[in-house]
Length: 123
Image: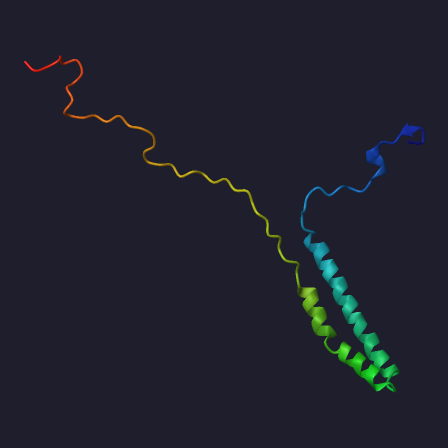
């Protein structure tokens, strides 16, 4: 594929960066998402109250809309203040073998053996 006389490789066609890690979103992005959820839920409360007034002649519908609008502020605050759980990651850690005080075979010296180089017997 060419663009303006120059060749376009595969990398140029896909301008969006590729995510190669599982990094958590930044604090600002996370807070903005929680703020949007709060505004959306609180924005639903006012229409529920207005619709309850509009449908006052259908008592069960007006009551359902009122009952729905009462816990919305509490739920909105709970959802807005809730952060996503931390990832439980298994970290690969180096575990060193505890050194032993004595390892391997040791030469045993027996005092009843004749000393080397002293001959075959006593004088």
